[in-house]
Image (cartoon, rainbow over all chains, first blue to last red; front, top):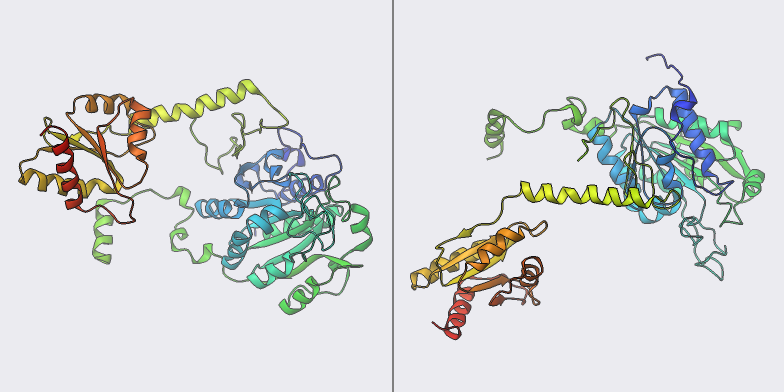
Length: 292
Length: 174
């Protein structure tokens, strides 16, 4: 393995400062992502950060790297195409719970099933923040929001359990308020070959008055500080059900299986972006012979 | 237009954004509002339409230039119109065909010149409201003489067009 040369954090400083509310959890996620790629020595030219729509989806504009800010819920579909276009790039997807677990849920499921080599960072604030506070797929039952004035009548989605059964090969949860821990989870997720989900508690200080920094601080504990081993799917599923007075963060599950890129014959000769376009007349003739 | 740098290229990092942005990808749609830049970006994008129009070949009339009726269509009506033309020709009715491949951007000047040189014009289209006839009028100011429309969920067949053309000519001085 090549020696990793750590790069200076300033290299990833974006052209403008984020317009997130003061205290937003997303600041900690941006910082942790920048620290992770610096630690791994990934140069800005080799990093592509892809997002959909939402407060957290504005993240690609706030760091120095290649970025793509696309349509609501479509970040994983876009990232799939970009990764297949050049699978030597490090493709990181950033977005929120509404974008990923609501609007884009079908892409989420199939990207995990395919085990594309992608790193998906979900800034989960359990609310639609950009649209000023409506219930999202991870809003807890009973929570008051602008769209649930008598309390949310639905139970929330469990993204980690969903990821485990859909075939994600790296399933983790971080907390924006635990910077070192989150940085390590992101760095490991980027290094992991296969689909890595990192669901991050990223409090919305403006619209979610329930799941706040103090609320999480009192409850979260790191799996890495227990004797939990992230190698057993059933154990991981059981662990993913824990919620309430004690909430686990850390790596729930890691396994290895072939990535989508491994099985795609078109990528055998290197990234598509460096392959020749079109066919010679001889190649065209050979294809006709094969299929006619 | 600016050339596009592929991600992975050293020194040209940018964010491709769907919200309005400046030339390096910084969003200017909300916090960093910049009306002058927004207008320039819009004008730059719209210049693509001119380039596209130049790259697309303008439509041409198919068939005898002095035909009694010009049949106008787009998309899937091409084949059936050509079949109907052949049948009409065998009955001594000379028609020609203006098949439109590009609706946006539209070759307004070329199409207007063609239409002004036609004796009678009929739009063959598979919808109720005459969308192509309206598009022609919007883009060229030219109003066609009539339409052959179908909106029963089935495609055109040649005999349907042949009969409608004969009916039209019967009522329009032949």
